[in-house]
Amino acid sequence: MTDESKADQPRGEQRRHSADRPHNAGPRRPGGPGQGRDSSRDSRSGRAPRAGRPPSDPARQAAYEAIAAVHRDDAYANLVLGQILREMRLSGRDAAFATELTYGTLRALGTLDLIIADASGREVARIDPPARDALRLGAYQLLFTRVPAHAAVNQTVDLVRAVAPAAHGFANAVMRGISETSLDDWLTKLAPDYAENPVGNLSVVHNHPEWIIRSFAEALGGDLEDTARLLIEDNQPPAVHLCARPGRADAVELADEVEGVPGAFSPYAVYLNGGSPGDLAAIRDGRAHVQDEGSQLVAAALLAAPIEGQDNRWLDLCAGPGGKAGLLGSIAALRGAEVTAVEVADHRARLVEQATGGLPVTVLPTDGRTVGRDPDLPEEGFDRVLVDAPCTGLGSLRRRPESRWRRTPADLPPLTRLQRELLVAALRAVRPGGVVAYVTCSPHMVETQVTVSEGARRSGVEVDFVDARPLLPAGMPKLGPGPTVQLWPHRHGTDAMFLAVLRRTS
Image: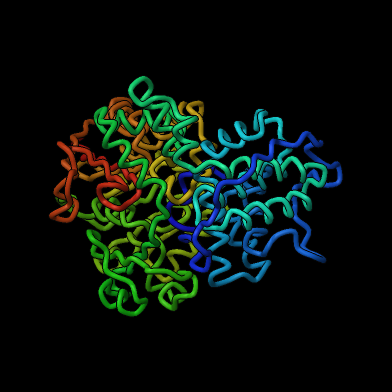
């Protein structure tokens, strides 16, 4: 689990397949949607049988099971897919193809559903879930990959025959109907006219819900052209970033070791060119961990802020699953400081302990809002405090594509209330003269500017905003007017991390 898994977890609790031949689908005769029953009572689980003749090749089967688990069980794709790949013993090109199909289908879900509904002549909600997920997977192959049309159609029909037998004729007709039209033509047909409804057009063309597009546009000053560039980047599979732990590894040397390249901005970042990070010796022996470069930058910014007086008591108030605590702990070991890492969920607290083994980090399995009531979290007891607040995760949609369709505006009120309460606790925990970094992996203005302003107002202590721009590496472009900073995938190649730094003055 990476440091960014915080975004999609409740508080308290690859590219295209290189062997695929070019898409060779030519004009085909229409095959209108069949009218057979959409499901079988014996196939309600939607699981493809693994015994006997497989209904699909292993990579497609793995992708289908991951997609079905996301929709059936509210599973997280990054967790369930890895487990499925291990169970099926898939690696190399098969694992890469399964990953591309899984993440690509989940990313394009909204547009795929529009196309399936049009081709089938029925609402997608009326299609039985196993058949529906198989059709989504098949439509993605037809429209977004170079998989030959006949292969995509035949494999999808075989899969539906296994998971929803009565719907195989229906699936065959729908897939053939989809294959007769190119993606560009589908988008022209289904997307609203940009001049009349630009957000609706961007939603269909770039596979994002309209409410998320509006929130991005607001954070980008209303610039819809820039918003479109962000949406395009959001749909690209991100590179894996490593964090070379200070005192244990050098980023340049680590890049040579793993055949990667040093990061563009963070002095600890290494970009992997491929492969599984879990196979790397540097990960296994604790010299590095997986962490988006943006997360590295905001954690390091807390430590770059100048303060007067002692500087040896640091607090990570929302530490799970431990990536930022690992970086803070590594730097603390070099500076003679100690880190208290707070995580309310027991299983995530254990992850923090694993991530910080051998470092001067003490893990407290408690609620960060208990500052002043917990003797281990005294008021004015820390010199630096990091609040990596639970959020909607809208800044990491590249990594968790299912989140864009799972999150709703209704998620915001309870999250922003929690964010304010944690920031208030942090401002009580830091001593006068110390600094607090409020960080969240979302650009939504309610989770960023509004939460920071309201949290500072309600804290009952005097604070000044520190200009966060000089706390980031020199040469970073487009950091805005300050004092807060919003990082962006399309501008910085990072997750959309927000950073505000506040100094307590009384």
